[in-house]
Length: 170
Image (tube, rainbow, N blue to C red; front, side, top):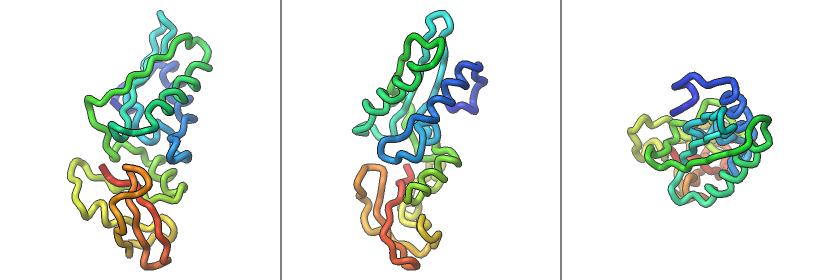
């Protein structure tokens, strides 16, 4: 569930705002909210408990525990929050289409080509055909499907001659 799909209470909105400060450890310009891994936020007033559901980008993502700890630490500092409960949920797979518009901008600021929207139709063209984050050219080529992390590929721009990474569409 994204934050646009339901009405949040003022406390839940406050939690989402705090989560904007929690950055992805591999792309520190983008928050966990902008990345789309926060799938639900709820606040139980009776227990003063923040309940957060997150869906990591990959099942074997090595940063899951690190992100959980950062989320916990940020939310635990909030007034009226005595408990923080975080659930890692794999029941609905994460997709790069969950990245917000601001998230796409942050990915580009970091120097990566943001992923194209796939709407469930992933094909090699959407992985290969990316714009250079340095000069904006679409005259690029895929050098390697395998970048430094599972979510990245390596490309080269024929215009500016720079090698760059792209966030893979999933």
